Length: 348
Image (cartoon, rainbow, N blue to C red; front, side, top):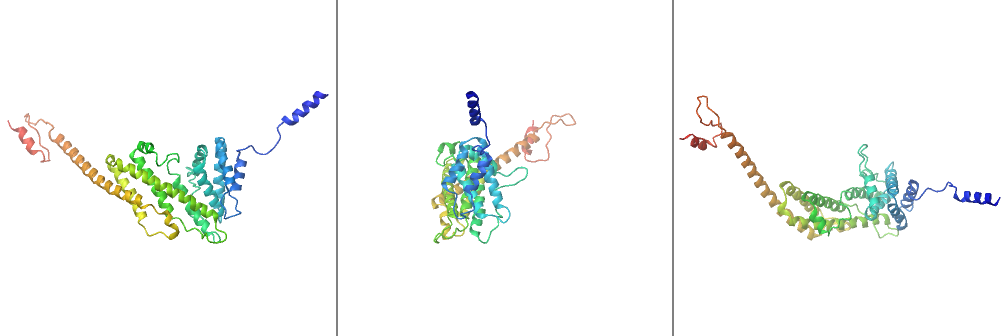
């Protein structure tokens, strides 16, 4: 009798019972995203506690990281549909920016896969340039448009583990890749320069959510400027190794950077987004040197084309052809370039 009671007691503790979803499941991911991007309070960014909960999904399995990425993208799409919920959309974008910068590799990898344009449907979660500008949240909606575009450009940058000061990484890059990375960082700096005006911070309740987006954009601007300076210096050391195509591409990138820096003066609140004058001067000097390389490579290629054309003409003229009378003379074709040579060959 006692043994039967023990068996029943053991089965009560050991038998599976319905309960909450396992940690890292899709339900947990949607719940964590909903708490981090709640509409109320609409002017508060995701708290550090909620961001830590999202970052924890990157310390689990690939399935848990994929569940969080899917939940964030679903939340962003829902906020951008209909009349749009600017507060929730901007919170999603801010959370994505933090996760891409601080998340584990497995989480960043799943976020990149979830944010790229779908090859079949063509849907892009970050294509929010037409996000509705509501009357009550015009500033937040403007920053949704801006921050989504900035995130698109950030996804094109090299992996965050590649530091701007890593000389070995830069030295190992081929010329086309180095120029492509320079162009990507120039695009980020140019996008930050076009940021919309944030709301005033002098009021009793400043919009902390937008100012958090401003802070993150400033971090991206500083990082882009540092990476531009490092790549401009590296390109200056290997300028003589550029091909004509690479030199032309480099000139275009540097000229676009100069034109952005020399555009109309930015408003007072946006002066922080301008590039450092030293970086602009270094880029201008490199562009002038690159233009000289373009001219030199163009002259060299024209010489090669002329030499190849001359060699082919020579081969056509010197082909020995038997005359109908049986003599061993050479026939002269329409070109008169080698007339003297042919005449000299026919002399006894």
